[in-house]
Image 1: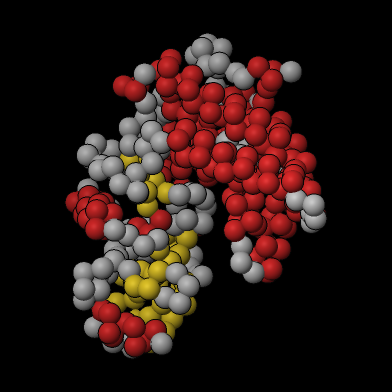
Image 2 (image 1 turned 60 degrees about the horizontal axis):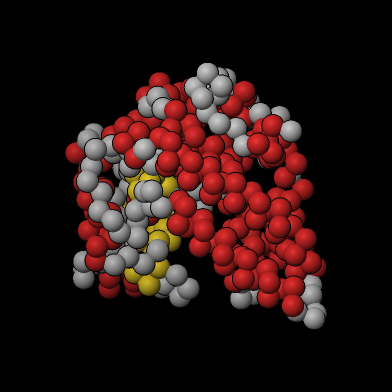
Length: 336
């Protein structure tokens, strides 16, 4: 099946099938490729993503896997359930164990500053409040509908019980963003760079090798990637110690964070994105298996929320940032 698609869509002859981490791959014309899922792109988005790849290449980054175009000029092909892209792996690939992710992310962001990014569906810059409000309103509607249901399952009851608390967190995040916009001014905001939907230690891990995949790229302010990287440790009892502090320190050696950047980072941590992802996934799922996966993830998430809230309270102290000296306001209920 894959061999036929590769020939019909790309005129590539698959010489050998390979596995690269979690990705299916193949060898053709002496090059190694992987096949990765991608959101369907319109014409503007394809143009933008192509320009991002040119930008990285022209600014000296050879560690990304360029997306191959089909013979019709598309950056993707349709699979049975989703869309896929074919990416050519770079010839020289460093091992993930040999690099500092914080340093590399700082260099990556620095390289992509100063480009006139177009406003497409790939661009989330200055849009957090809009997207968060939309997701909050959707869950509010589901919450009201769920309460009216005469027959409720376990997940319905969990949703009804926990959403008011999550709604409060969301409103705090929205208020915090509004205060930053009012007090800092757009001219002081972190500039747009190429970022990722949800950056983590595994984002650049391609079978143990360090490879950036353009299929994961979006445009946003750099604090998005930093917040998403450290978010997982916010659920731990020990919070953001050691690994995350090294990550932030290594990052700041390349890209120092301004006062406004720290505030945006904190605002993003305030927004309970994991809860939203799991609830949205559960109620949108079409199979029982998928529903159970999201139900399990949500239960685990809720069991760790006490740690998360405690780490939010001590966040600025944990990272060694003098919030009072920098006049960074702390949310009132976090002080108690």
